[in-house]
Image 1 (tube, chains in turn red, yellow):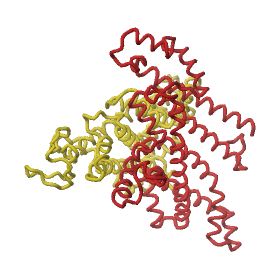
Image 2: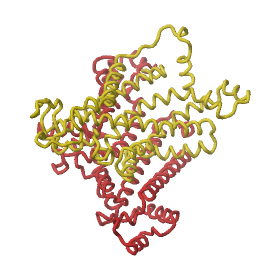
Image 3: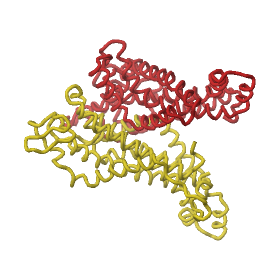
Image 4: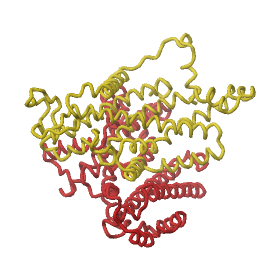
Length: 308
Length: 294
């Protein structure tokens, strides 16, 4: 187990390093001269030279890269020219709002998707099953910004039940997190249904039924425990997805999270913030994947570090 | 694995007692997609008005309103008096163009990369696979926002951005097929007969890659169209002087209370098309691999 943990953590670190490098390449090399970007096209040669010296842009690229990687290891992405303070500070300020959104979305997905999937597994091929299967397909196809707008129209503008922007009190988190969760409810339900149907065909279910166990207990005690593992895996991956997908939903609802910060920063060419935000989200994503992998091995005695 | 799946499809029809029929869902999907492609291709002929010309006296009219000159705005008009139906038709062209061009470009890069890493293996495979790992560890929407934001809004840049974020998917699919095909007996015999690498790849390995590549491409077209609309919605995709479903949705957000149709119509069109593509993609996958059907 120790060696497995070490190997997986090493892989995750390698991928994180690759991601930071990728962002460095895209941000530093593609858009042209950063000094011109900061000062605008009218800057004099002297001004450009002094900005280059300040930011270390007059050094060769490999040296800039090494300095940058050293800074990143200390959580230093430079200062935001627009917001004043450090880019990482701005990112960390906004991160809790995004986490709140993603966590509630995860809770909603689990609370709605799991029972729905079990109900479908009880009567496969019936109306509910067909509805959920169509719904999961349509849900995946719906652009999340549209879903958000429809929910605003319905619950904020027509019914006046819930606020549509973050200023509207604590219940403002409901609409954006539902927007984030809804496309994945049907998807999780399908996963639970297929997993449950597979388990129902197995011997231990027949034994439980033969002992006279009620159908509810068979499903929710015996079968549910056996499909818990894939569900845990998927929930970890979903959390990562929600944190990343929150970008668009946050813009729709003017939610003060990491995503709206990043979109603001990229339209204003505030690359220090862009980098800090992207690296933060990506590191979360990679860490969640790592946790899921480790949890799987820890929870399932059939999986050993060798065959995982 | 895919070679086994491909075998019955290439067998003569007589060996298969009854032909597999497309389910109704797939036909619905095909109909929606066909309608969309027709609308995009014939758009300029059908368009009643200029998609970018403004007409302020006729702004924010609800669907079905009659204009001053007696014509009817079937889907209403937007905040500067442009006809919504015309905007939708113009947007469908951009959507289709971006979807097709991205999948072609990403698919071509993925095909070459997948063949190289699957067939030759070795260090090329190691390098390409690691790059793919890093890219897949990156939420694709973030990478798209980053690249599109840096490149600036234009149709070409959106295609480049989305192709860069998607090539890995195609490369993975092709690599798996090429890897399975390269050790098959008929490839060995071709090698023994003295066929060179290019001939083996084109004549013997490539044919087994087409089918999974086609299935992946169908699924990806839908995802790419949503990604394009999302980027345009954020103002990072199609520039404002061109009609795009995502940008129209974004423009309509300020009028949600007074003119709901501006934001909802393009997004509903997009959702319909992407669902249609999804239905067709599912049917393709089931035809290609009957065991995947549940």
